[in-house]
Amino acid sequence: MPKLIRLYIKHVLIGFGIAGAFVAMLLYFNVASLWHLVTHSDAGLLAIVVLWFANGIVFAGVQFAIAVMNLKDEDDDDQGGKRDGIAVDLRRLVPVRATAKANDKRR
Image 1 (tube, one colour):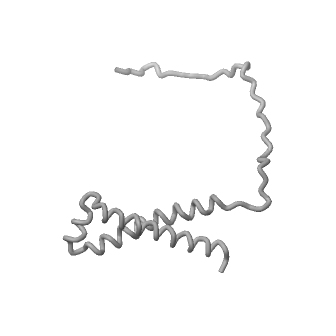
Image 2: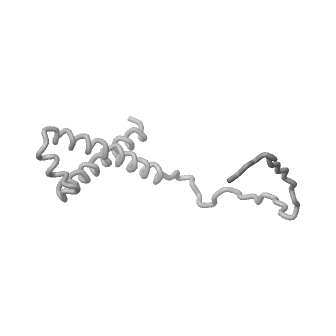
Image 3: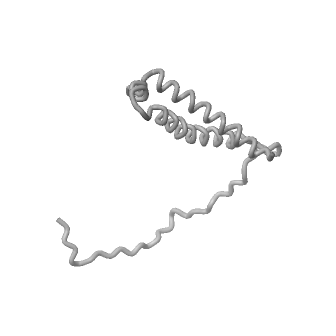
């Protein structure tokens, strides 16, 4: 299996694990009476699954984005690119034509 696919699967699983812990904390601390709503409803289990899955998508995306941004090539050096200055002459005026309609009635 390619390294990138392995990296993706690993960090998606980590993201869904974090989402599971997040949903568990939401239920444990009874945020917005969520525990009461889930336990006293017919679709409580479905609500938990949907909440975990939706948060899992977000946390997995963030986790993988952080992992990709932390990748570094071995040949990277901290030199940066060449930055040439752009010649700008601020002393030279540039004419700009502006026209207005004669029948403009503003109130």
